[in-house]
Image 1 (cartoon, rainbow, N blue to C red):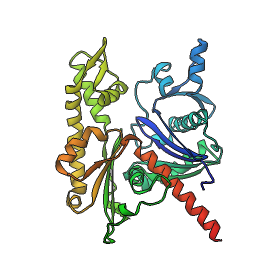
Image 2 (cartoon, helix red, strand yellow):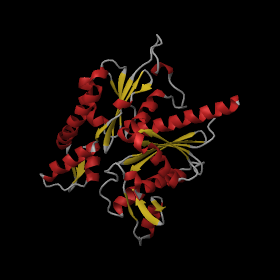
Image 3 (cartoon, one colour):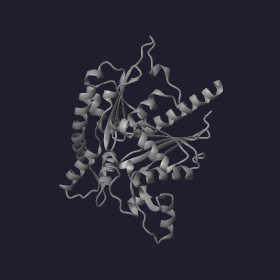
Image 4 (tube, rainbow, N blue to C red):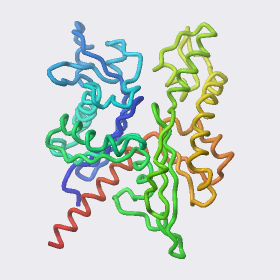
Length: 336
């Protein structure tokens, strides 16, 4: 049915999320977007543990993920700029994702169909370049770039086999439905409006991401004598705990930090969607920071839906899109 291995690749600024489909089986993977130049290790167990997370880009070795954090001392995520995909770090993360999939037993990664994403506001400018850069890491791959919120939308609109779910496109009377997407990522929060099945360009915008909450949490904890790295704070936003002479509960501090970024996201959300919100069928909420702002948005818009496994929704949608494209390709060949 699908003549290529499909890889939905969401290379985020906080984590790399991957959903792959190969030989009838689905694979899920995520790891921290941490990258640093590799160093020589002396302990055999450490060398063996680091091998899976070590890649070579343009002749240089890089540690990724936990190895970058533990062995290389990486304390900040990559990509706090819009052009970060031009860096060797982006290529290192792409190669690391593929290497990890190979270790999981995924076949067909020499000629895969890969779908990658860009922030909504940069899609028009970065699409072609992102495809080119991803092919630089994987020269024999078919690469397609979509906006990240489009991936979240497709995870809802397409069934797991890549075929559209009719009742999410039209109601029982045949009326075309409309949906908005808010994808709360690390560096950006991205917006998308699909009105009667048509993408509305003027509503494809981006605003601040959840990294602002991590920065604010670091400031709050600093006033209490806790020195926490950005990576520590990103994790604490999800767990509401931090390691400081044992495990400390930081629920109240996380709530204060979240309010700081929620107000910014809400301002942008209202500017883009306030006039549309009451007229659309629903608002889909995705991304690693989705749960942090869900309650605030739900108070204003009761038809907002937190997508299942919101953090993986973009990669899942990318994979389903890839399946749909391969089905169309197969059908076209059959007709010919």
